[in-house]
Length: 136
Image 1 (cartoon, rainbow, N blue to C red):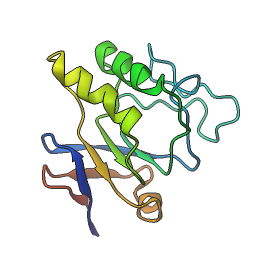
Image 2: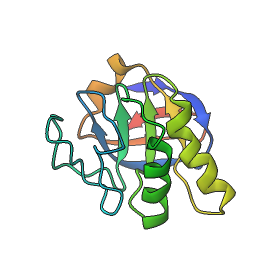
Image 3: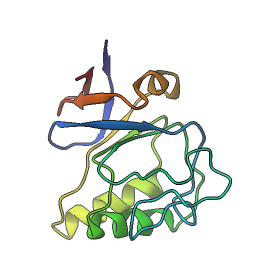
Image 4: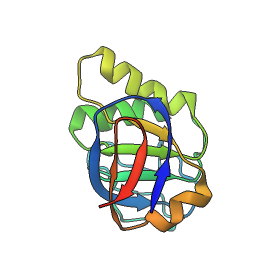
């Protein structure tokens, strides 16, 4: 199975386990910036950790603080290895842009429809720098 994702923020190829969320998430109040744990008590994946995972987001729940939380995750070394987003979230992606401006290693971000994210759940996948997704 191979999928093609649209590049939102380029980066190197990445391989890792895919955490495909089953519901949208707010990074502000939903993810612990010190550990990467999902802490939203109402989220289906509460208790799972996004650190080092390829994080598939079927949607985000906006807050202007989302970029700051993602920036903190990058700084703490607890960011996802890559983001797969159903739709671009400029506020969330701003955290990655700022992290790059600070000279910190940042994960790439891609657009992949939510309908294509589910089959990647808990699988080892590789995303090429060009956005080609394969199951490792």
